[in-house]
Length: 158
Image 1: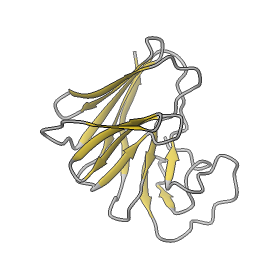
Image 2 (image 1 turned 180 degrees about the horizontal axis):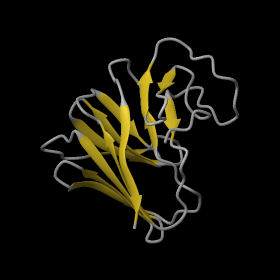
Image 3 (image 1 turned 90 degrees about the vertical axis):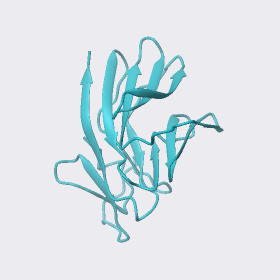
Image 4 (image 1 turned 60 degrees about the horizontal axis):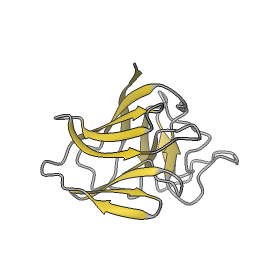
């Protein structure tokens, strides 16, 4: 579920806390120290600090999409049908012959592995190998009004 305390004030969060839509109108949320002020971004309320976790994000036909953007995080970016990953200020272009409608994210905290997949075909998109030292939160940036919604379709551990 999405964390309303972190969501940018111009993002609408659905009543079930699973869908975010960009709004041109401030939502009037009270100040909160975890609220994003610059990026139109929302974190998920769940964080992971051990075990294996998988979730999917519906990127649909959105033109631009960022999953997990932060200066100290890992990010999969979509701009039109061009995919890239970002970590530590370094952008790496990806070869994605068939752009997915859903992106799967697999986190194996203990192995230090964060992987992105085309959830449509389970084709790997990119993996990061890292020793994680802080809890990780799924995150979504909604940068343009043309991006309508994000839904976390499935999340589980095992």
